[in-house]
Amino acid sequence: MAAARTDFKGGGRGRGPGRFRAVGRALHLPVTGTARSIRRATHAHGAGESGLGKLIELHGVNGAGDVMITVALASTVFFSVPTDEARGRVALYLAITMAPFTLLAPVIGPLLDRVPHGRRAAMAGAMLTRALLALVLSGAVVTGGLELYPAALGVLVASKAYGVVRSAVVPRLLPPGFSLVKANSRVTLCGLLATGAAAPIGAGLQQIGPRWPLYGAFVIFVAGTFLSFSLPPKVDSARGEDTALLAADEAHLHGPHLKPVKRPGLRTVGPAVTHALGANAAIRGLSGFLIFFLAFLLREHPMTGQSAAVSLGIVGVAAGAGNALGTAVGAWLRARAPEIIIVTVVACVLGAAVTAAVFFGAVLVACLAAVAGFAQALAKLSLDALIQRDVPEPVRTSAFARSETLLQMAWVVGGGIGIALPLHGTLGLSVGAAIVAAGWLATVRGLIGSARHGGARPRVA
Image (cartoon, rainbow, N blue to C red; front, top):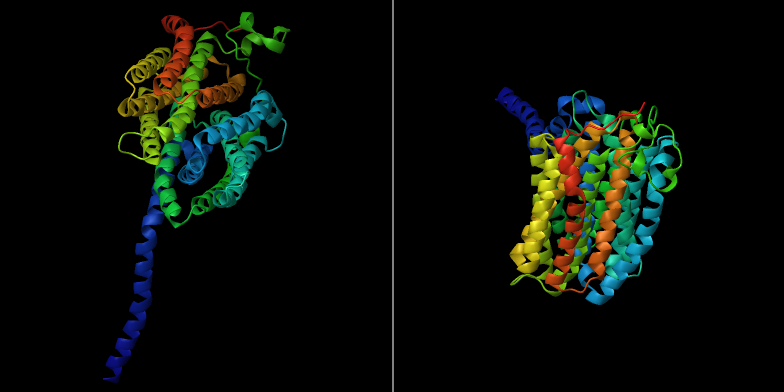
């Protein structure tokens, strides 16, 4: 009997820790299993060895942090002051914060090339800036202090600066046999998935209190700060690179480059790239326009039967879904006939904008947001393909950074127009259609001509 009791006790001691270990495995398996699955996906096909996988994960962190801040601001601050006052504040702080970025953007790239750990430090700085501003916002959303709008728009500037640097980093981390279109598709798609996953988490934290999504953003961006320095050192190397000139050829140089420059033929980007960049700028301008114009329009005139917050959410989800679909289609097409793709998607956006302006309504506004998101993703991937095809390797990284800077500036201009216009649906969307039409009409002939000639351009030694 004693032996039996001893066995029983011993068995109990043996099974107790075993049970705890089993429960522990059951609890952490979903987390670790998901993390391993994400790591396998982001590091597949050589992306892990080249460092591209870490950049993909960093971009996911970036998207998750940004959406946390968006949830916090959209749920509290945006609806707390009269529309006219909010528009005035946003317009003022957009001008104050984005003007320096617009003026300094052309020199940021060359400056970073001369700073040790420049690009990794710049990405880490953009992350840390947003982490600190999230803490500032966590107090402002409760008190309604004046620091709210400059802090919110400071987050916007840091996010745009990160986007410029990230576009310059991708070409340095390509695995063998990996195209830029495929790499950028993975990076963008991971950002969209992370945004979609973090949005409901942010909404849940919002139910606890208005500060909590911002605390979540702080933690995420701090993690992103450290993750930025985990990128390979080759990200910072500018050996063998030169500065790209965003001109078709020597005959189209402008500004300071009218003077003789070293080997201009190897630094210009070709007519296909310049026309594609113009078309992309029109779409990016429309994106900025729609974000600001619809944000205030739907606040005053929400969709039938919906609150302003829900109306904005519907449009935001439509735009995100369109962007994700465009990214997936771009990866599937693998840069086939990029000029024709750009011409087609911009024409589709123009048609959607005109239709939404003429027959203004909730469904058509959501459809326009989805089409614009789809077109923006697909046109940008096609621009990436043209840069890889037509731009010489020594200036390719610079071309990516400078083109992204121009697109960010187009977004700012479009946003400024959206803030300035009266809150009239038909009028506003007519202006949006005009933005797209100007870009499409100015570039369609050149893009079709480039497609017919196979994109070839002369090279100067």
